[in-house]
Image (cartoon, rainbow, N blue to C red; front, side, top):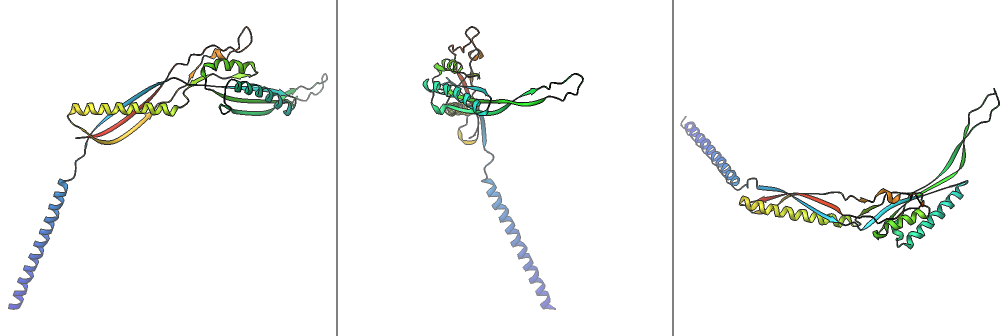
Length: 263
């Protein structure tokens, strides 16, 4: 009986000690987490700015395309006639200083031609319908040309017309190295964003610490088109005219959206 009493007290003491150890352990864990939470940085303060850049570039090349059409009783004749005209034009272009790499074929097609043949029928007799019959072949070739000496663009177009080109599309002026111009406008936009960030940070009494996010966008480069009358036939002489063509400037823009951390 006495032994059972002491056993019960020992069990109670052991239970109390175990409970105390659990409470101490939980308290230590909670204290550690609380201290760690004290060292967690809050969300950093940021500022966002938009920078814009613009570069005015003077076009340094001209582009145009032309076509040569030829018909023949056979495919061979049509191709020979087309080839003769095209060779004359390309020879002229090279003589004007156009590199072979700047003369490119855009389209070449050879198609049969047809005509509708009516039936000759007697009076009050059955007349079968007419039929489509082959009537030779037609060749169409379209070539694009890059003119690096833009002062000669009007003269070259006139010469192409005189050599037998049947269609000349609008002449456009543009910048050959577009990527370089876009990079320049982007650099201007970044510089503008940095300046705006420094001014804003100064007004707020903080300092710029680091870059948080960055997004860039560059605008398209639009070609300048010459007046359509340049490609029109002269009403008096029936020849292509080649006046001086205004080149103008092209505006290339860029925009960046930047977020900085400040303290």
